[in-house]
Length: 497
Image 1 (cartoon, rainbow, N blue to C red):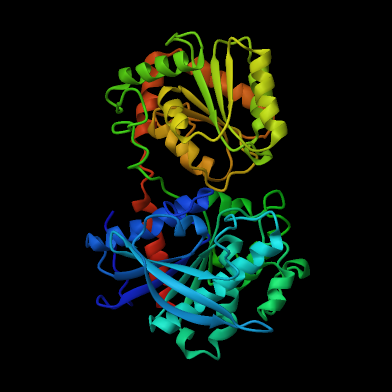
Image 2 (cartoon, one colour; image 1 turned 90 degrees about the vertical axis):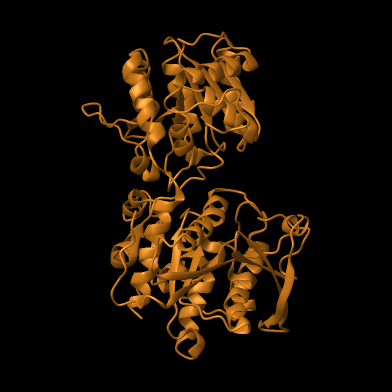
């Protein structure tokens, strides 16, 4: 996709982007945020190095220097140290640097980031202290380095305070006078509860934005929203959903009042890791032109799971964190409602104990049809995508979702709720030659069972099913598309300075 240069930006000017996050693959990954922060900066860096853009970009990623990162065999060098101010004694921060494909990555260490602690604590106040310290250190770092910041790009509540504090200091700090800010929203319900003590410790004042509810003025994520120049949800549909009471966590009036700075950009997928034509974790590699080989993967996973090996029986897979958000209970009930139809199912995931037990119970009730694997097993997930015919994804809400993108790349057709990124990435139009999956509207077992039944009927129409698989597999979810959209956003914000 060619990039059109905005006339108001000089061609030889580089845009400096400080990209800060709580996690980034491959250094540390707990959830979808790790995928984004690990892929998007690198995608932008690659595109600019490939001279696709006329505008130059200098993007640098900053992460907390967790113990799990310190234990890795990385080549790092210490670049600086400085103090972060508190209401008592200053806290020392040390910064280390590494590179990946020429992308500069900084790691911030300090007492609030103990090497022995997990990335995320159950103790919310400890996490707040850690991430607020990290956010403030990220604002101090460019000043120590003498590296101009045109765009501060943060993610979720962990780094939202950096945006809030940037707005607070811009008027009196000439270094940040022209800096603009973006906050990318991955998961709205997590707002940074338990941060009160840390806000006081680091002398951070609450938001005074009149459009923000009183209860939200002391929460990092809403504070970041109020201060940001741009709020980006991780899909266009999710950006629209958070304008409604159902999805907004009681912030719909705020988002309604700030629509002009709200947008949505669909996340991308690591198409090198998730590629059925090169995947070393699957029995037989294949592509959209050799779907017959996919059946060999189906036969292998049926054998591995102790299911009857039958290529004509639809194999349904569910690969998910066991969480109420993911609609696991809806999937279980929908499978019960369709138990008399010909299908087999493999369920993989871990998390909520009650949901794990529901999955195991379904296997006990339908031992000839269902296998439940209560674990986190990335290698098995590769084999399930490769062998599965359909993916179940009945999320109650899904800001973006990567599972459906992976499944489509492997010709495993999603049956999913029409919400958030699922709605943006899956086409369900039976009257056109565009269908890449099956969607249902309401989050209930009956609606899901109806959509699943439609998919099962379609599976029996072999040529039609193959066409759906081929369309799904050729859908381009690469990070290049997201990178171009973020690049345009960076340019627009810089022009507005």
